[in-house]
Length: 117
Image 1 (cartoon, one colour):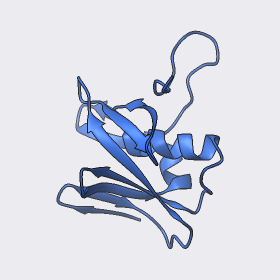
Image 2 (cartoon, helix red, strand yellow; image 1 turned 180 degrees about the horizontal axis):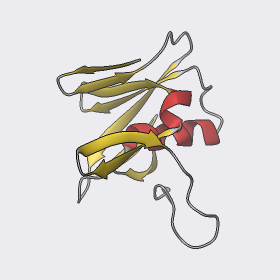
Image 3 (cartoon, helix red, strand yellow; image 1 turned 60 degrees about the horizontal axis):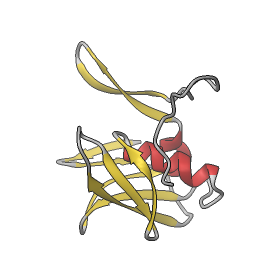
């Protein structure tokens, strides 16, 4: 289920697991630094989706857990980790829309987000 409330987007089902907070700080070009429990986990233009993939990849969350992104004290987005990890944003002729996430090819340098060093 997706619910849009002004500037907050919620993608959730009946989440009964843990809730994981991702703190965001702005960078250049519409991207955000992502922090989980004080650890810088990367930079992305899709921080909800990228952080959900990071949580799963690093064994920090189960698919049924929730992930919330915050800008300061304001929650900006919330989703079930497993749902968010499988989504991306695509810009088309009619604006932005959700699409299924496709990992980049394993060859080459392209990555969905820059990992913190």
